[in-house]
Image 1 (cartoon, helix red, strand yellow):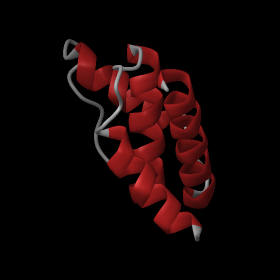
Image 2 (cartoon, one colour):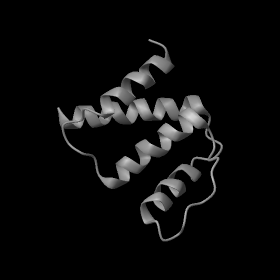
Image 3 (cartoon, helix red, strand yellow):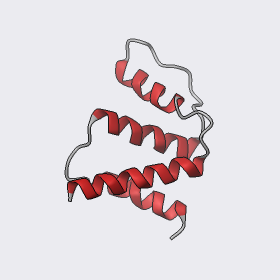
Image 4 (cartoon, one colour):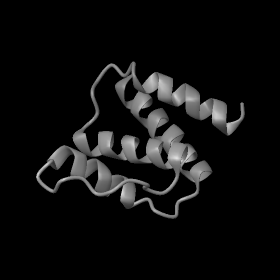
Length: 87
């Protein structure tokens, strides 16, 4: 199966995890998804008092320069680990 299909499948499966991952893992999934689908962060930083938005922005910013395909692979690998852990 090609990487794009594996990624789309992993994204779909992320909505059906039996246990909610930690906030740290959720941020990693979010940032890998954004990097894989949009590339480097392309928005203005949020209000510093919007802690959730700032955490998401910072997590995505930390992946600056990572190729989309690499982010897709890491997302798929993380989902594989999460699914194995919750099975």
